[in-house]
Image 1 (cartoon, rainbow, N blue to C red):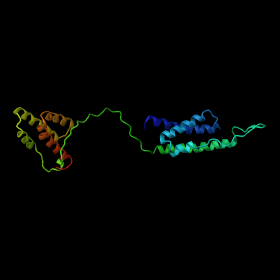
Image 2: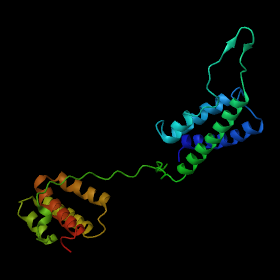
Image 3: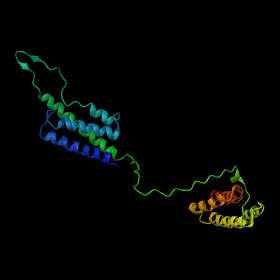
Image 4: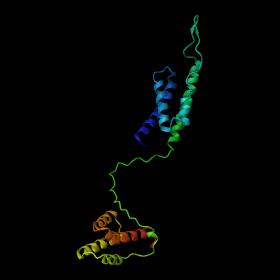
Length: 220
């Protein structure tokens, strides 16, 4: 849970305590703490559930004072600012507010928590290897290192390049048939790529495809 939600949950718990304090002191809407309590509680319900949620709407509709037209008489003066009826309305509204907040806290504790981003170091970026092969995974042909070497022999490479290409092919074949570590594969693929498109296509693609076929169970 993030810090903002923790803040509003704490405020709702404090709101429940404030309700009991209002009752003990027989406070009313003139209490200097009441407007702050009303505003903070409404804000916390809005933040935790949304303004249109039932809890937020029910709380906002509470009437803490009896609605009436204030009559002013020149002979008798104004009507009383706070009556016994107002106090009853206030205390009943406090009871409903207590129920709303309690239900809201109970429901929030059952909601699935959203995963917080872990404060860990960024993982190593995996090498991006793009292989454009059409329907190659459906092939039943099994690729062996000897076939790859044979392909290299047919390319007419200079002896030093041919020897180097065969060494890289052996390295790639060992990894694709073994642990299949992408950092290791990426280094060998870059070496093959530097030797030209024909070497890359005749060595890298067949061995990579063979590895992918094994991973998908096509050659199991």
